[in-house]
Image (cartoon, rainbow, N blue to C red; front, top):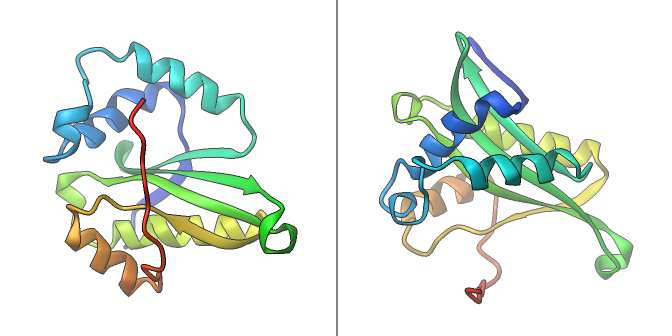
Length: 150
């Protein structure tokens, strides 16, 4: 895939990121692009945490993809550091063209650079296409995730 650059997100990217988060069946029910204030506040919290890496993919100055990588030091697995990939989104105009793979390769490479021994992610059970995509990248559906809505 040519013409795509991956860079750290900046505050001006928040509207485009939120638009991508809201642009699917699940996101449409939980995101609200009409009020960006909670997203801006969250962006500011992310910026203040060196273990948070919010990135965007850009083509010709337009944000066309995003993901968040969180680096977590821990005691388990012999004191290993792991990373968690969240909020992977690709703009509708770019889907099926390899951008998701490029974003995930960036996340794995950055995780290695950060000294992580494991990259993990969760994917909503209602997203079988996403599950196949992650499996094609070598991820294994080894755990069952649980959530408690607060």
